[in-house]
Length: 268
Ligand code: 4GT
Image 1: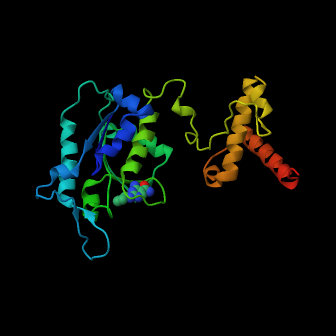
Image 2: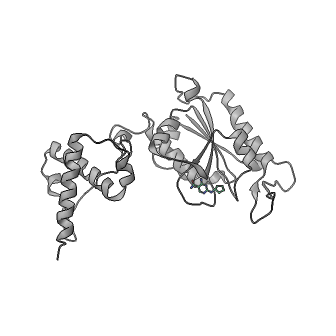
Image 3: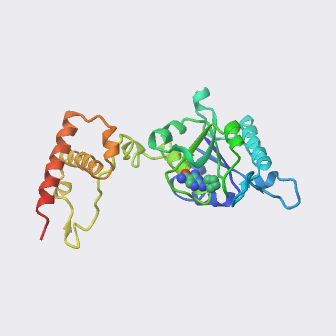
């Protein structure tokens, strides 16, 4: 799979290229990261990449022409298959290329969309700066506008890196069996359960005894109950979307009743 990022600050992507899971996937040629700087497609002597907004107001926009040329160059690279890069065998529409613009106006990224995008052969990702890009460029050139959430960044690069990280780590060949992504929270619409490591007692707070008992089935059941309970407490919106089995309903109801018992008699 290939990511082509279009950014005025391509060096920022060193942050994912050289570290951790994504860095390793690039080194092993499971994914490829290509950086394209619109400034390289300017023709005036100042190499301008910004332009003033019609209608006035504060701030600038990315200039159309260098951005469009950068996007065209990303598309052209489609034609030259890269040496050694792992390809998805089915080269149908589902797995071909897609142009994404990152902005707060986009569709909110979630794990389901991450999974969908991970099937593409080539993602061209536009990271904006200033006040963003011309609406006609979005309408004509962008397949999908994506948002990381209801907050504003000064540039699209950090959003792009977050998205690339999330997509790369769900690819089956990338994460080892040990760290498999299928077990992650959100894959089934629930939050994660709490985790514990040494010491057994931390400032008087003990590790839940079930985790020390060695009964793997009891542990799995406790963890599922925690996932249901924590989702009920913190993200009722997620729970409302999820169909629970009788067993899961039982676990959640027990969590709720224990939670209420605990509520009505707070410790000292
Ligand atoms: C927020 C997000 C994003 C920005 C988000 C255009 C110029 C957009 C700056 C950019 N802010 N991008 N992708 N919530 N700012 O995803």
